Length: 400
Image (cartoon, rainbow, N blue to C red; front, side, top):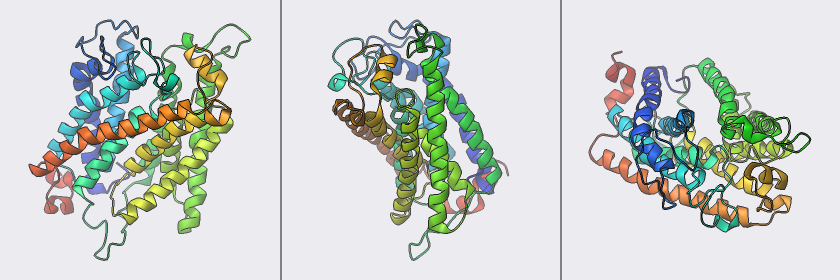
């Protein structure tokens, strides 16, 4: 809410509340079955089963709750890209479709034991002998939300006044840096559930005393790599934007921080802390570069969501394939001898699998979400009128 203008703050807060509420219903009715239903053809779960036992994941209610949180995160990312100009009915339609079908299919590919790209696949061969290591969702969550937001923002077009008649970028600043910082700290705290929490149970993260698994080392390491990547990205963005603009900008720093978190999310459990610093440093420049490209192409994303989550998420998937350490990969998946990071001496098979999944995720989300936004636009259900946009949706759509 702090990142948008005050006249639209109630609108964006309502959409995020409904992400959680509508997402719970649609993920329960449809999405969870598509994600983890058995049997599976590798592409999608087949059986609707509500909240029954799922053999391959040992499902209980807590697992559903955790996966619901990931699903609504993907939908929330997209809302930032299309903020301040989207009709409420369009938001409800795309959010239900994303949480009920588009996102669950991707999560099935990579996180289900039946998924064609899963590194934990229990039947059939692994993709390139390795599968895809996306531990907590740089690709599954952040890329899905970012690519969906990219298409929504492209089809809607920029907000009124975002670019002048000569095509020059005009800053449409949000109304509360304090809310941005508060939200960033809440997300920072939440990421310790997002990343270390993806072990699902503490019992899976340690082994005999004295081994690399001992003392919950995997959970602690994951929290440390998450912290270092985000912190490095924040500092890099601080100085990078200072060189560009001459200002110390807290909003840029907060976005840089979140970009670092989005990037490390894929490899947080299988890389060393020093590698996480590299991840964060590069992610900051990915975000800065994509923002510059967006301005040049007259692409308007009020929260930089497509650039931050889509771009930094894709970098995180690549980063993992370069820096995953052999001992940690063996630890997480319990199968010695698996491919690991290219720069760590593990060859290129993991990188090949990760490049394939980046392309497939981008294609799948584009194939499903772009037509939806196009149809909504054709029916006049996507963008609000110019009069409503100028007055602000809080006044015209939400009772003032």
